[in-house]
Length: 185
Image 1: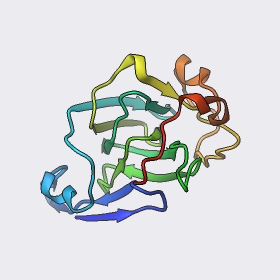
Image 2: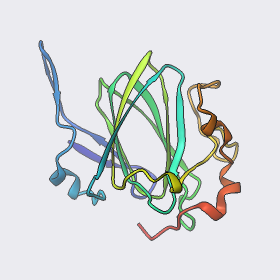
Image 3: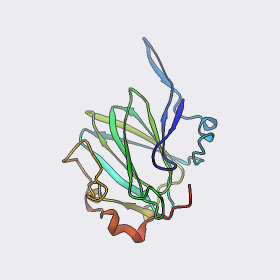
Image 4: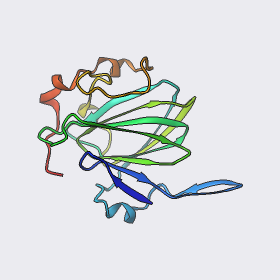
């Protein structure tokens, strides 16, 4: 397994070893000791799974009072996954990182607390698994508009399927009073 830093502090791309033969493949999705070396926040206290169709875009989501770190993996299909640094005071505030995650590569992304997260589905269907460092808290749920012109995220789709909630989010500049602070890591 390789844990690779990204240009955004605390955000890691993870490339697990995939073992395949005529029967299929095997991948170790998580072993705590392997993530300790990269100082990936734990413990993970909630696992979530979503199933989506081609063109679906979910995000950009975050929690304010109970921020979540997320370890994300695609177990079926492929998605374009995006993390945005929304930590006020961070040297990379407002910058984003995107990567394709798929059941072929089994690549993972670790998104630390203080980042907004979203993904769009590139395959006919996608099964998306994510481990979270805190539980879902409806009162703390926030979001940033997926196509905020200031962020200029290069999404691979132009007319996504969105929930009403995701359509109604505001731009990052309009959320300054509801953003986390940078703690230096």
